[in-house]
Amino acid sequence: MLQHDNASSHTAQQTVEFLCENNIIGIKYPPYSPDLAMCDFWLLFNLNKHLRDRRFTTEDEIDEAIHQFFESISKDDWLQTIKLWMLQLKKCIDIGGDYFEHK
Image 1 (tube, rainbow, N blue to C red):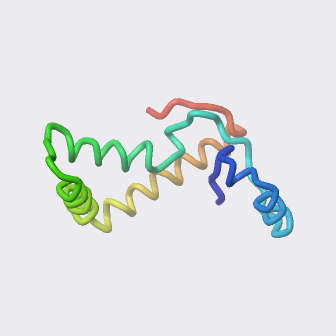
Image 2 (image 1 turned 135 degrees about the vertical axis):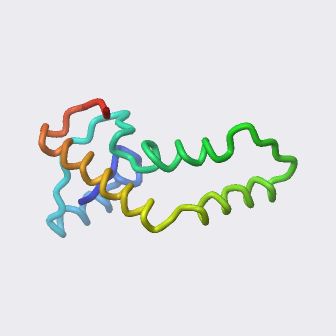
Image 3 (image 1 turned 120 degrees about the vertical axis):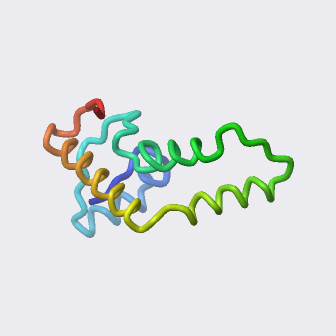
């Protein structure tokens, strides 16, 4: 499954030609749909939770905190998140690409 939006790199002529030449067909993608972007519905939420109420004095401290966050994510966490993401994508396909609220 290809997930992309209207970013200029996704709509560039070269990208469009590649997708057509390789018979890659997309579906209508609802705008502003955080339920379909793994970074929005899971990753950034948890990263923000990890960084909440912490104060950093250097960029290196921020880098280290983010690195620690990624190191703390277990393989099972990733697998569960991917399964949830796939369910969200299937739901979008089942309703023809229209917007829906994640519950």
